[in-house]
Image (tube, rainbow, N blue to C red):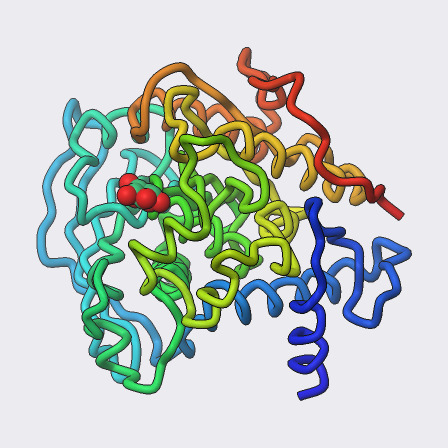
Length: 368
Ligand code: GTR
């Protein structure tokens, strides 16, 4: 109750720059690293309250039925088709594709929620398996439809008022519950990813679940890794996204239409909530709608938190030429990042190159 009141008050102030992630609701600042877990929880609470709404309750134990099985191309492993049962009494049914390398595990996992888009064909499976990773892809639209329809978790819990991005983030967590029951899975090395709206919810999933070791939104832009306060003409804005996709967010988020500077956080705050765990955003220079420059700014601001926590190399960004897509090249970038984070491997790619070296610094606070 007290926290909710403080959250509401914080929402009233005008902050023109990217807000200070070290600021506590009582107006003082975090002073030591030991305070970070509590500060992270407060920041998440604020972000969920004003932007996405709560995640659904945990529900019953997630189970999986293997309904199909085939050999992966070139003897690289096997591909399972699984029906997951989640939510109250397992009533929410979600399809999961699970590609598992041949040989002795356990294996690191790339968990993606975009199965419903039907783009993860055998070329993606082959890439993952060759690199020794499990590819687990579930259909987030069965957790909650990509529309205002109240199906999936909304039918299972009629009172539930979180937006789709929260429901989908919950889908990542529940799919992970199932994955962690499998002997093939290395539970300490799980990365979550997704494209665009799928990247927005992957970022939220990673920020809200400490079991996730790497969080990797791709071209996620507005509502994801891009910032709300600073954007160019061609970028999606808070106004545009709330108008077209109100159901992705909590109803309260509409209060910030025309009022973005009263938002008590920006998306660097959400990125910081992943810290000290690893975070990579992959961006396309031609994807102006997704605000690549504003995404660089959230990266740089979040990096202040990572550096303060002593892990500056756990946050990365990678720009490529080209348009809005989540292609093989983006997954190769993610696998390289995971190889570094999970196994300390040396790779030739850098994850700190700026595409907009002259972009202004849009915050004045410094780490404590
Ligand atoms: C767009 C939307 C973006 C992004 C994209 C996608 O229409 O404005 O925020 O989510 O869809 O998911 O591909």
